[in-house]
View (spheres, rainbow, N blue to C red):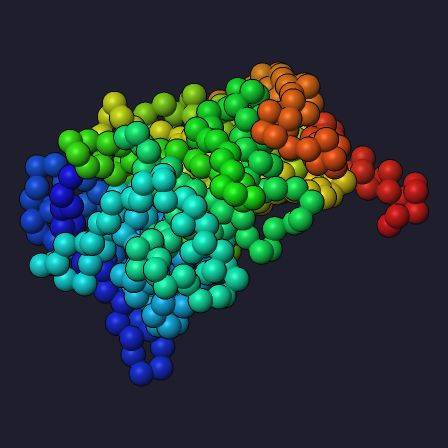
Length: 414
């Protein structure tokens, strides 16, 4: 489908410091009968411009399109370090998560490149490995295969197409632990999440030569009339950045607040909130402390174009050496980020659950995770040694963080 011009993003550079970026919808988009806000909460349809009020250098859902560590590394290598977020948006391959793309002027269409065929994965391994290790690219492939710079995260990645579907391909990195192949570890965690009643991205592990790759089906792309439709996406960071709490506190991200905020957009509010509680519990049980606000999001609802729904769970990776007392990247309840039953139950009503129902979910996830973790690891081809090393990842949730503190005091650990 052809792109539609929606507005203009500016980020002028002064002599000393950059000005705050601004975004303004164009008149033709406001008058379009199908024109919809690209961020209903942060960028509602209006004639007046929006000015960025945070620290990211972008506005609303536009921040979700910004390249992160891997994308910036590839862009900086190809073009030199960029001077503003807008430069990174323009230099990136226009394959951002969600439905946004960018060009230098209203007259110039974004350069939308078709994803590479899955058969290119062997050549892709050579290109990505060279980029990750800061080595020269193979000359015959330098311009034939462009790594995906539009998506977030630190792990090397590209997008490929296969049978009318697009897949995000995650490659190993030089920073990975040599103990466990990360592709198989993440696949095992996603498999376990699904067995614990959580909607996850469709995924598989493939091996190219001696390299394990994780393929994750993109939930924001759908084949259509020889091309692709792009579905809108809002990260939890974007959703949580709107409202009074974002202006009053430097740390405002929490599962309970995300549960309350998603009700403003979700067409399936109660079900999404209960699902989010289950995901929070699961992340705590498996020791995934990297559950930050860009690892959760909302996707355009296929039944209501003006609404969103909780996106499938993605980027779930347990810590190889989880701490005895766990905390989450997002707040859990009234006691902050502590991964305890007491803390989870303190905010149960934010998820449309009473205390008894919430406690039952915790019990259910604990039992399923403990029962299925070893088999999930084996199903993804992890060795017996790796399975043994990963056994400690899955643990029951303690009643209170104070119980751990008293236990450590008794042992002389504090």
